Length: 357
Length: 228
Image 1: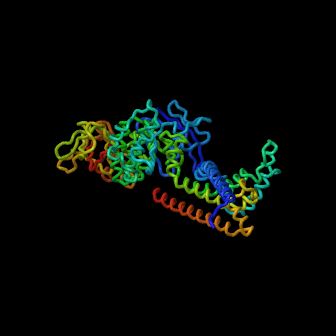
Image 2: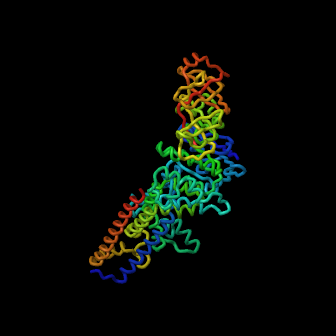
Image 3: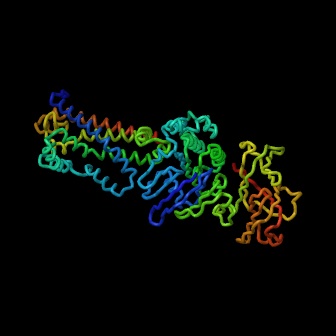
């Protein structure tokens, strides 16, 4: 499934949105760029909230906008979730959830209230008034409400930007779960590399009103100049399955030849494909197998690429035994002393790990 | 002092008919206009806004005078009607109804515009994404969330029409049962030195106006609190 968007639109004096691209839609597509780069405008164009003259929007074989044809939003079956809470304040949680469900023809309903409320953990909130919900609960209800129209496409406009870190952490697993379990393609606008790394499968990079690049998350993390590294430096995302909690409260992650141990977290059940996010500056390299050391996670890796140093630090891209990319950030001095070069087998020591979804 | 004769009752009937029809017509006309003023992007909004607000600053006689020209037997509207076999509209109930609709327009449009601005586009966009068409959105989202604005618009329109005098006198004259409204009757009574009759009607209008405004302000306060 793909969506093709073509539009040219002047907004203000020095900003022009100009796109003519086919976006692949599978899983979560992150729309990433700085504030004001046109991400939200593009999203509104896809939704049909912005009616731009001469634009065309084609979703699969449906022409949503082309020439004089313009399908209004209420006939597009798009689930929308906005940044700030957008629940209808005169309705209860239950009536908010069912507002779209009731307007969806029975034959098109694939998702039903019981499973959606269970998936998002909002069963206990149904009879509440909107003003009795916390920010995170509101956002979960908004997600549920959007899912209950059994949408063909979900558009999330910075769904977590207005939430505090704690609430974000609370919502993230639900979003991840929603993406995998509902089977609905998602386009998520975000300016946070962290959110993109956690949730996106594919990234669309936007800058100054134009789409710069469309690539998979792994491709974009393999580039030394990835815009996703702007916040906290180079980052790797490893995928693997999570095992059950063992003694000492840790859980195995990944295959035996590239095994990591992650701190136990209650929520996710075992045997689901998960992501780990590892900051390059939390990874050190060693020539010998490290023993007698407090750091628990060591992986045997092969150096694949060494990026030119910046401010006396350089990023070393290593290939793990299960063929994933792990980035390590070390000083130029350390690199010289260890005589690191491409193709050399080394041990990667990982100081800290965040389990994503 | 407060005995009302048949002339008074007739004036009351004309007045309330005029107020009721004006209010109903204006709610229908003002709703889309106010929505456009609150959410539209066209530059002509400012022009329309100014035109709608004109009755607030113009002397009613000016408005009445031009309406008399337009609706009278030799005016654009009046003459066309006569040519089509109808009667022109000067000195008729329909004539003063049109005048009232124009004269009270800002009192319907402004509270609604304000209410729609406060509502913002978000709830409407959300409702569309959830599959609600335009009428459905109006009924299930816009109306319940802005009913305070509608109550204020209706009450102010009604009360303002009640207080019309100059426009009606210019365009409608003082024809009993047709254009003689309360304010005109009071004027007639005072002119004829019948102060007692003028007084009882004036006091009635005074009390009615006060109660109306009191109700409007309590409602606006309540809705503002409820909207938070």
